[in-house]
Amino acid sequence: MATPAQGTAIPAPPPPAVDTSATHSSPIPIPAQAPPPAHHPAAAPVPPVTHHPAATAAPPAVDAAAPSRAHASAPPPPAHGGAPAPGEAAAGAADGSVPAPDGPASTPPAGPWQRYDPWAASAAGVAPLQQNGAAVLTQGQRRRRVRKTLAGMAALLALVSGGIGGIVGAHLERNGGVGQVELPQAGKESADRDPDSVAGIAARALPSVVTLHVAGSDESGTGTGFVLDGRGHILTNNHVVEPAGSDGEITVTFNSGDTAEAEVVGRDSGYDLAVVRVRGVSGLAPLPLGNSDNVQVGDPVVAIGAPFDLAGTVTSGIISAKERPITAGGEKGDGSDVSYVDALQTDAPINPGNSGGPLLDAEARVIGINSAIRSAGGGDLDGGQAGSIGLGFAIPINQGKRVAEELINTGRATHPVIGVTLDMNYSGDGARVGTKGSDGGSAVVPGGPGDRAGIEPGDVITEVDGQRVHSGEELIVKTRAHRPGDRLELTVLRDGDERTISLVLGSSAD
Image (cartoon, rainbow, N blue to C red):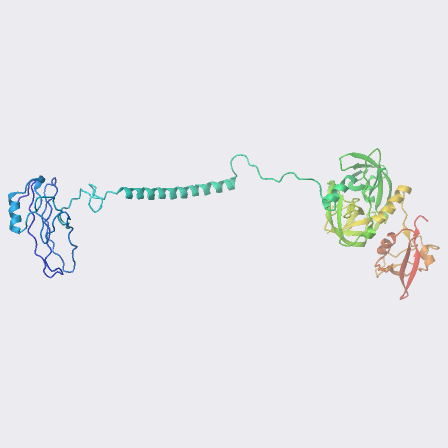
């Protein structure tokens, strides 16, 4: 069969046979195939389509402007819009179809293969095809696609930005930021503090506390003292000024930084107290003295000194115990440097250099003179370099006041005495009176306080004013906590029997 030339209309093939078993009451006509596009070089014949009995085709659309014709189809339009060819007209007549009357052209029923034009937009709104066969997007579809693309790009940008920000943040955290750093800080506040606080107590006491630098021919040292009066008298420990000897130098440095030369007024090794004096210094502020008899265990205290030459050091704690019998010194071996202290115990840190400094109560009043510590290596004297372990000892200010007054007034201090010689080698409980004195005579001084009270050699003193004593050192401490002329009640053990003896203390100056 020859291929029609371009522009020649191709007549429709004869209608295929229709399955009469379909559910419709009359056969469904198959519309004639529309001619291929005019520019297509050839059109292959379209195979016939047979309707399956189980598939009911939707009725073809009918143009409302033209009369409806059942089981009939319009002949194909003439090529190039001209009149139908003679053969075409005859075929239509033989078919039994009637040509449409003059007037508006009727739209033929839509079929799956009729009038298919891939280059024209569908009347139902289906997008036309591009030359590559892909559908051309409508304007709404293009807008939706653009929005989706922008949303995806925004999400990607946020993800990338977050990653970069995290990397930069981690780098800045490890290596610091860029540029100058300025940290937040609290503003300036008032320097005033509660007078009863540690800071308030220190502020009131520091102007009256001094640091002593002592230099002698053989040794030197540093200690602390505090002002007693406006005439320049300063109280400190005897072991602080002892290295100066009779020709050494003592320099006093005040809290303001001013310095002055000092001289020894008097000192006593038995009480471990000394008084020095500075001259030509005005504006001295003496520290008020408290009453050590009023102190109770647990009371708060503040210690001020120059530990290891760190002047103006302030520490705080409480009173841990009272009437601790402490002996310090003894480095000379002859007992001339041994001090006996009925001490206040405190846990306020005290270290070498604190010696002679004040122990203050909550009213910034002196209740003790820091004198000794118990170190982990043993020993009481703070002349060693052991540090504080929370066991510090201070001479009660009541005893310090009496001794200071005597040193200022007379240059020497008196000691209360019982008038007996003790056996310091006794290992039993209590203080035993010796059988012989240091001079080979009687252990009980004839006519002394003990002799007058009835004490005999070999007696063991077990209590003083109702408090137990366990050694000769404790008896001396308890005795020196009193003044000459004070009356004591002693419990004495003689030949297995206890008895109470009352005596009046004498003075070492007698």
